[in-house]
Length: 241
Image 1 (cartoon, helix red, strand yellow):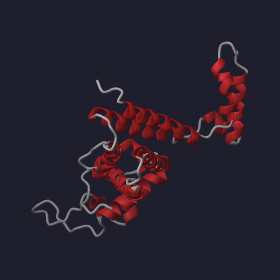
Image 2 (cartoon, rainbow, N blue to C red):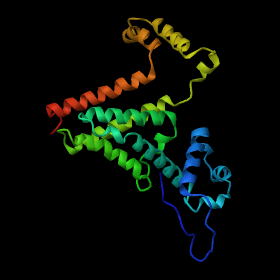
Image 3 (tube, rainbow, N blue to C red):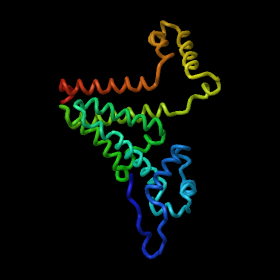
Image 4 (cartoon, rainbow, N blue to C red):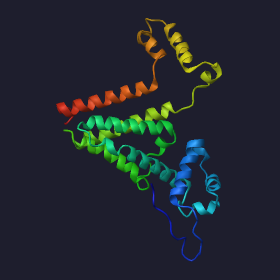
């Protein structure tokens, strides 16, 4: 995806160019992040995967922070490719929904990804393209620039936030319990049912739903609520003051 690379070292040093490419560096960086998380991404570990010395990495990135930003942008480039055919539908709200679902799936699969999206827009042109892609859909609606900015920011924040929450490791109580996920949820639902129904009427009402809920369904429902509000705002002209 990325074709940016350094073709020469600092003037006067006569350094030999590394044999691998920026694409190889980023592909291996993403693989390392996927396998072991952000803390495992070091120049030494990356160089070992590439079969070269640590110094060779500096031909392509100046620091670990830059490497993280560029790896994030590499993944976002893949997401852009996967959503290329989702931008021409007749309903811009549904287009935003489908793009958001693809983005969510990628962030859920790669917990490190959302933490660095749009962190450094100078190094993340693909992230900016995704932000703009969502915004261009809203330019088809009768909204003000402020409303469009707020809407895209809210959708992105929702996607990133829920994905980050769902990607967290399971609680220690679950790991220690030896229960299957459905059994663990049922145990918690029983705890809720045991609470005073007068003090916790809502918890009692939704205990059965909690016992059998699917986190993905909850995410999609929340996204639909956001987008329904956006559609209503566009159709009624509310919030234009």
